[in-house]
Image (cartoon, rainbow, N blue to C red):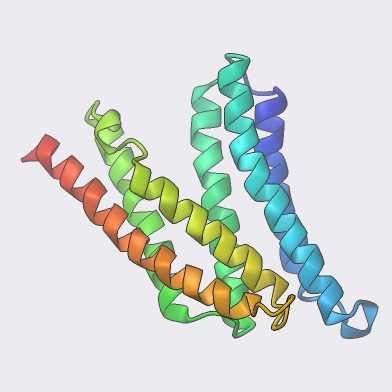
Length: 187
């Protein structure tokens, strides 16, 4: 099934990527920086919510498909990678965090593809540590896009980078976990 609501939500996530990017390249006088930051954070939040919602609906309505299983993680990884690159360019986070997270995503995607070719895709299925990594990463990116230094006494930019550090640690931990699971299958 190539078109249904879950697939539409996934495509929406892909289409939001150039919108998110364009916000930071608009001629400066069009919008105040705070407005651009809020719009970017909202777009990212919508994308993160549709990531959860499209999978939920696909399972609920039994509309899962091979195409959806392919497109969903691609959309997620593109949104995260583009957001990280924008945050590095805007000097809101460290390039090391982006390198770790993007490098892990490429590595694990390749590993999953390789394991699928061997008929052992389930040996690298999503683990709990990967879910915690994703939660920390999504919240970190949201806070860093907002870039509010004083939100009711909280520095969201600092909190975002603390969460990005935690996400980076969990990223390495989850990558090692997935590599260990795969190694059991190929050794």
